[in-house]
Length: 146
Image 1 (cartoon, one colour):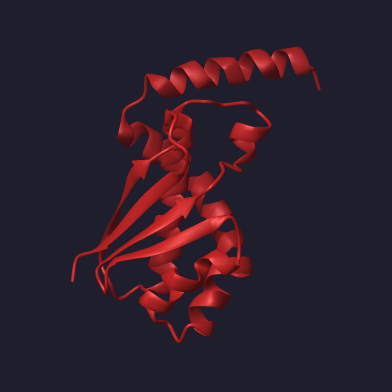
Image 2 (cartoon, helix red, strand yellow; image 1 turned 90 degrees about the horizontal axis):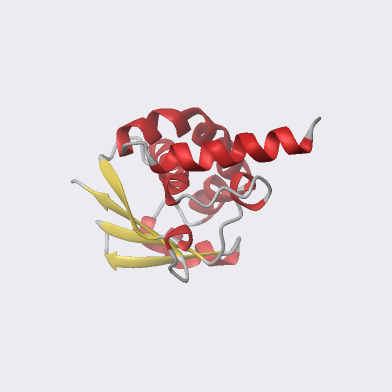
């Protein structure tokens, strides 16, 4: 493979992401997010959720035992946060994509995870902080509607 070609290609992708709307980024990253979510479900979230007796408060209180992620219970049963201390996405770490639009992939991945873990509940997820926007951490807030 031609490294120079891929460096230029990823530079173009980085610039293109910054010009995309949130909806366009959601469509672009939905399949990538699904694949990442499948791995995370298998090796991290599902096992912990079952270990916590499918209790969201316990899950978010214990998630930091598994990876470079912290959980926070904002409002029991309703509002939670996942806080990532680093951006480990290979699109960022290896392809050097710096656009904060990449965080939509992470948000989409969490949507996949929580649809699997709590399919009976409706929710939405907001990106509150982003390392790629210059923040110290990435923080996604999960808000359950019911």
